[in-house]
Length: 428
Image (tube, rainbow, N blue to C red; front, side, top):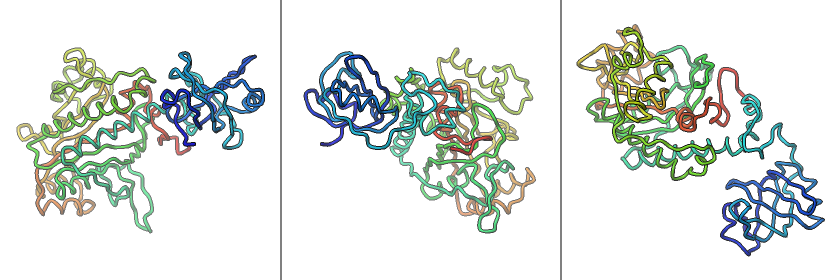
């Protein structure tokens, strides 16, 4: 008999079926016992009346893996309006040691550190697994949207010979006796691949050895990177980003509706045109000093509130960041060279995306590195490619975990990350 999932039970009323999953909960009443079985699709209620089977169920512990064979009957009070009666129950492994929290309760009450210490079991709770389902749907929408626009998925090295962002916050390692680093981003490689495919994207891990210990930073996270050629300026990149976000959100609604419902989340609409403000105006709106070189988290929150109040939008573009705060490969604004053709996208008052137009002429790279006192040698393999013809291009990167955290309203990005890596955590 082929195994079916709990969500398929309504289509099998009157039939004998085989289920398998985890003992989610047992309710032992005087005349009857209920075994709540959990599988990848949800919960199934199994009614146990036979004394011998009841004795079996009483001996089970929560999270023990079992197989159930029984008859499906309609019951409006049961999950999905059906339940399984006259069952046989067969353990598929030894009795499980119950985790240090109750997975059957609607809310996982354990502290976040306890959940992270026991992640393999804590992630079984619907509230934790729902966030991961949303994450998977978002990545699916990201890929599908870009595939439909002629982008090619690429896979670039995660061990590199020099840092990407001209910074010291990299994880160093020994590469067969030579110094190497974990990649801070696929930036250099995705730009070079524009010279091959014109439009590329990548889904992969990035590593930042920045000693941040906040609710929004991880030392390893998943980056959704995009780069496209033959752009006029950063506004072409912003248009692609807007369409990509809309595709991601639509796929989340379509494929993770149950997960959204579990978390009580309604996905926001991505406006047909996301409002945009220049960095200098953003400082005024946020009440920041005019000489502030960057936006602080408090400024971002103020801008998010302004965008929602004035435009009814959960999203806001901030363009024209000062060149002094952007990487050396950023293209300056031709009309205002002190400012960049770069942007950030804020989602509900938190920076979600950084992007912009890149330099594409070899001479401009040499000048940019010289202006910052950077030697060319560490970047020779990257910079040399621009001698051989590269189109005007630009791109962006979305932090997946931060996207899911803002969408679900999670207070800490670790709540939506399966096995987070940060300043303190290398296990499990």
